[in-house]
Amino acid sequence: MPGEQSAVSNSQMIETAAGLLEVVSFGRENGRPLVLVSHGMGNWESLLEIGQHVLANDPARRIIAWSRPGRGRSPAAGNIDNMDPLIHEAGIVLPALLTTLGISTADFVGHSDGATVALIFAALFPERAGRIAAIAPYAFADAHFEAATAELPATERESGLSDRLGAHHDTPQALYVAWTDHRRSHAMQHWSALDLLAGVAAPLLLIQGMEDAFSSPVQLSAIADVVSGPVKWVMLHGEGHFPQHDNPEQIFQLVEAHIDTVRSAASRRAMRHAIAAA
Image 1 (cartoon, rainbow, N blue to C red):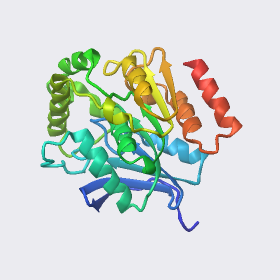
Image 2: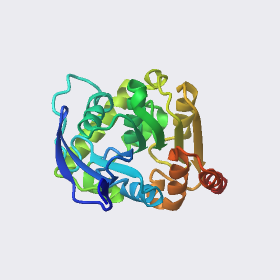
Image 3: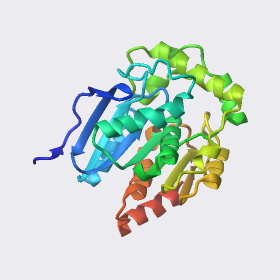
Image 4: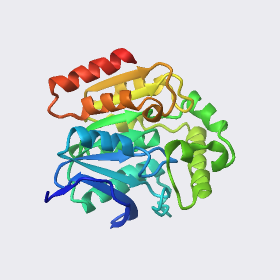
């Protein structure tokens, strides 16, 4: 059917005002966009199952999966004038991507620091952010964050993170070094985006595994306290940092119920069921 892309195709390199980015777009070309923003060691493939599930249940959607700078085939950002990489991605890279794709407003699913990028974007561009589902976000460097960062292995291969996320990178070790250096910088500087996140008005779903080695429930409560929009948050007993891989059906239900702008009775029942099972 014209105007539809029914299947995931190979990724493409797209030139934006912020540089080249590796992007996959599928679903209805003029449909309501859902943008996937991966973990710091992920790429466009890392949240793909969520996007495919959303599209299967809502064929009118358009799904955007992309590799953040330095991930997958996307080149690293280069000199960003000492700007924090997460703020650079949220304030420059992500809006440039959306503009290039002709997207004015989108919903988002993000994981870990990808969730943080989505939240910062929503604070900086509230008119462009719809609903956001944030899995294991972090908004400041607390003691849990600092301890987890200190325990990171020396190499990408030892970490197993790319394999865990199903991600493929042109330069995996260089990415791993840059990502761990960034985390260490946040830990040493006691970094916080909480003041910035006060500008978030988008409806939020915050999801956290109780056994998460990288993040803690304190992050969710702090985010919920500062944002100005409505918030639901769900704690998953027995789940770690990757609930979308370990318990995908539950995450699918939670995300689908949240981003369904029609808010059908079926989606509300799915949300209640998923929360009750958590």
